Image 1: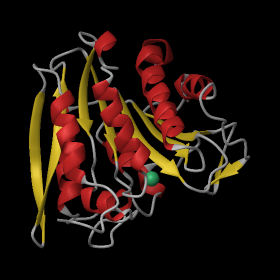
Image 2: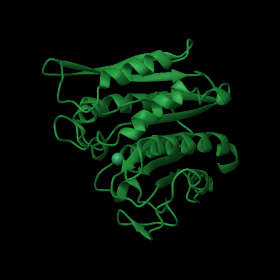
Image 3: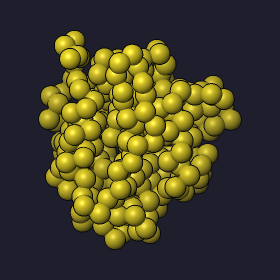
Length: 256
Ligand SMILES: [Zn+2]
């Protein structure tokens, strides 16, 4: 029994397992063993071999549950279905299970995993995430986050080429029908244009590497770090993430 836990990672695993389509591949990249608890770090592949590859992930920050919930909803509502044959989906439902259960941004060791992708010896969660990039290169990386302090939805966009593609703006336009955008001109110290943070540093200028920068270094074409605003109800945050994912997939060919 885990009476003090806010969320159960096992419950998330059960939902992913139940919703995974018959011809998908669910594998365990590694298992965290903390005290008497075991946390399998799972990875789901749907539509293996399709021409375009997308990586979808939630829960690298444990206190941002809408990302994990949105991944489950994406599977349960079969949002991937219209894109089968076109997209191969690689899905990391909950990168930081100990943080997810504790409701903390950091993992059980107090590490913000999204700051450790440049470490020589990152912890197992990050080692496991990195192995997924061996299946790349990805066309699209969709990382589902939340911001408890923000006025509305915003996203970080990083492209492989110097010119910023229009895809981020189209995602924001679509999400705005579900959740207001953060209209501040500066968000988290970066210049923002109606929720779009697209003038981001390259890996050589960064003191730490988040997952999106690792994806960039691994040759992924378009990285999106998508942030719902924690002030809105959970269902609205899930819908904002679903709308963002759906728009990214649908609009990709026009935006790349
Ligand atoms: Zn986050």
